[in-house]
Image 1: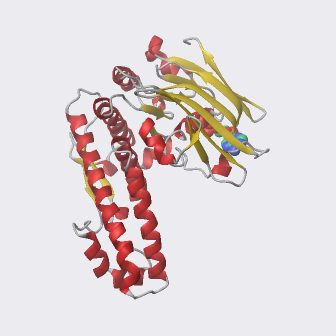
Image 2: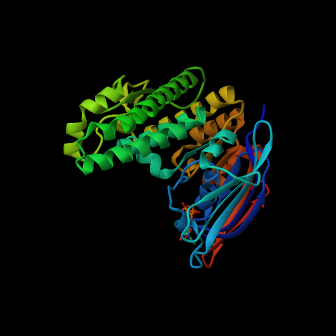
Length: 366
Ligand SMILES: Nc1ncnc2c1ncn2[C@@H]1O[C@H](COP(=O)(O)OP(=O)(O)OP(=O)(O)O)[C@@H](O)[C@H]1O
């Protein structure tokens, strides 16, 4: 099968890493080292080779190595479906993040077309019990992996909504100011809604068609107020209510992802911590299988401390599923023993830290 894989990763002054240059093969990479060594920083750098602010949602200045804080750079050689791309992303102090693909300046949305990168990080352990925003972001990343233009629809919708919210806050009542903005929101909103429903269908089908050790999640797109078919009319009718609130109260920006642990019929938020994690793993793997079929290659997976939560049987099952999927999964853990079951099916790297400076070294199978 065609592979999507990072062949080389170079970091310069990125968080605790002053200089990193590693060459990888398409197998999963198990990254081990003590707490605070700089393992997550490595996979955060990989996450920045996809659109958005990466797996910590950090601002560009936070990524610069302290104390120098001069700026940072990540370079990745990414093997994609038809060709290999050089992706460079960097920021100079006080400036926004920039991007070049194959030597040419490119918008971040272009990254969604050449690669597919999905992640699970410990902060997502509370995804099912916290507010809708995290679940929406999770769904949108899955959606983006199926439909790269989703990012443009979300950006267009958010830009128009910001303009509308400004008018609402300024108590502008003249309908002329609203019509074009609401038409834009309705158009991009319909695209967002359609894309998200498509992603849910894909995840549902991919869960149903596989034999897996992880539980099935029954998914639904919900919202405090249903997203109307005719969003433009609904927005016009809702202006007075929105003006009182000082913001737009209806639309896809209020959507939520509802999940139920299918075998038990229990909502994800009421499941045990381990079950909630297992549902997330199940969805990431389902997303990977669906992409392998639709896009032609499984995504790059970034799994931060995923092994720590799993018993040995589940851990072995996860590794088996990643390997049969053929995904280049970057996995972190505090000890090499967490990856024993991977054997020769993975490559290994140790991250260590001395005096606030991290280093990474590829290792033989531990
Ligand atoms: N901008 C920065 N400049 C220098 N060091 C930083 C910067 N941001 C974070 N760090 C350091 O990076 C280290 C954390 O790295 P990281 O989160 O990658 O650790 P980890 O190996 O994943 O640890 P754990 O196993 O505890 O999750 C901390 O020591 C932190 O102080």
